[in-house]
Image 1 (cartoon, rainbow, N blue to C red):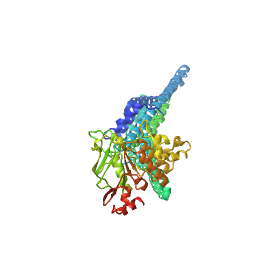
Image 2: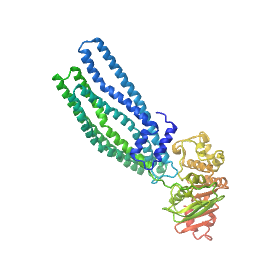
Image 3: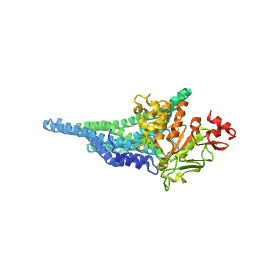
Image 4: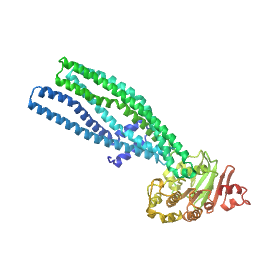
Length: 585
């Protein structure tokens, strides 16, 4: 695979990702022409053209050899013509080799630049709305990006094929004007017919790729939650869901392949009929003496040669259809709107001391207000997981509230640059993913240089699993942490959050996969580690709520606030029974 310079990658991906409204045309153009690839594409086209022109001249030179050397019995002339043929074959071979290498380099660089643009858009801190399943993003970044960049080969080889057809036509004109005119006049209608036949293929190609991406998204989601599905006994239902998606993708692929087969058959039929007509006319002219034997051989050779370039040119429509379908999917992903808007005039907060949630409303929250100050641990109990998730996402600005505001030291968060906001408020999602690398790498992923990783490891009780792992904290972690148990993954993710040591830390159910003894130890570890920082715990765990300075209960009847013990006490809290049912369920 060709190496891609970092400067080229960043320039192209930035150009594509920041385009105000990416279109299939702009995606294709960027993939094959940006960062000097237009020059290389031109070089590849010249090389392929040289190959095709040389191929077209082979039957002409062989015909000339027969007329000027074989028919005359001139041995010296025969040697010279054999040398010409050898040079011709050496030239066409070298042209193809150089062109193929250059085209492959353009192809790989173009695909890589699109993948980087897709990655840049997917990782944009402002998010995407609507969100796309990981499997769909993966399909677009691999299959579709490759199909768009693959248009490099389509364009360069089909242009060369067209010039090969032109060379053959000129050669036929020099041999016989009627034959040359036949080719020149009949070729455009033949190509238009072949392009018309390619139209249905574009529609089926896009549907095929969309169904394939949907099946990939379903597969990715199911694999990610496989252990949970097995534990819930829902594996058969998950299998049925994937089977339905897979069958849909298979049906779409079969429709596309049937269309491709019909298109190929029609192309072959049209091209073969055209070539048979040329050969027939040439043979009649040779019999009448209008052309020589060598010229007849040249005509037959050109007729055979023309089949390849004509079919190649005809397939330009199919190649363009596939590239446009994939480019459309890439363009739609790159053009997906942001979940939150960038700050128009970003303010600044050096070190958050107070976070205020003021009457925040989302699809699941109704007018929520709360405050967390430096040095406090505040618990939040919600009636359902959706409310907790929405509150975490609002604090992290992964979504915007329908109404209400979140402020840091009296500065609304929508006036802060997203990176500055997240440097002050660290609010990882509940199902935080682990990355390939070691356990230690995962713990240190969000930490500042010189951070006390050992303290975070101890606070999250990761030191307990360290001895159970083959290489301790240096044990490699597989993709998404699947080599670890659910409880181990949760502890490592918590240690990573604690090691980040942000001014404000928001944790959503950080101990749901550990036993009660470990949970109690982790609760004490969080209390000790977060001394001096602001911490918000969204949980229904009594062990975690017990370390909180205050607990805020969000319910449909209003907000109740107090310590965990006060909220459990029916003499001080009329809703103690409802609270007890939430935290002991």
